[in-house]
Length: 315
Image (cartoon, rainbow, N blue to C red):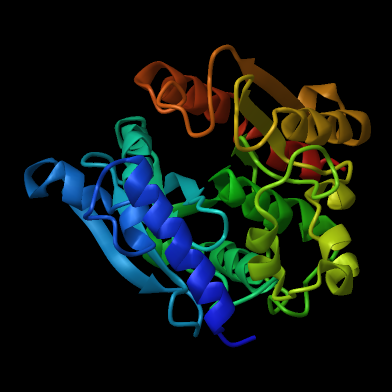
């Protein structure tokens, strides 16, 4: 579906409202809503070793940035980020990614994925691109100096939806043909304040979903909406998953994370899934990006990144 005037007008309206809410007239584009981390960090604080704009698929926006630890020879374990932004804004290596660069000091290669946003692309293209990105990383592991058997995937908000769907559906075969049959399995999933089940509780603005699914009448996308729920694709082989959500989230209710946690727990087993609900914490709250919580995330990854592969190989 080509970008249309209606969707463009709604996005422009959302940008204006964001600029007004933050009293920041420099917010003029969708990218400005979550600026690039280089803009905030400056060159002196920017990582020393990196590769930017690596094309992982033939789509224009299917690019990734890869950041390497200053020390160590590799192959390195991998932390991959799928940014949020209601499926229509945000960018790779945005300021939300900067806290995860602490993973470099823990010996991880940190990768930030770009993907095609709506309405330039509609569901399920973003999901298939993420699947292809994971497949690309594995296929080119020697060149990238990474360990393809130690991959953690993080997503926040809409990014949590895309990341969980791309990874959890690997074992069900969903979108396998569209993604070229690539291996999109990961060892660990870290999901923050995700919107997984369209039919559960409070929703984002209706136009956001219409924009994402490419339908002005969402009843015409009922099958896609159902299949876009990662809870429908959980198997006994689900990766170790850490879900974190603020109890005071005003955008996506924490019941969304409770929902997915219950499904993974019941199908894959309680040890495969951890749910942490955070007091006095809103959507994309600074508390979640604080050093202590980022350390908690990497502690979880450290503890589980090798376990999943062993269990899979052992049946």
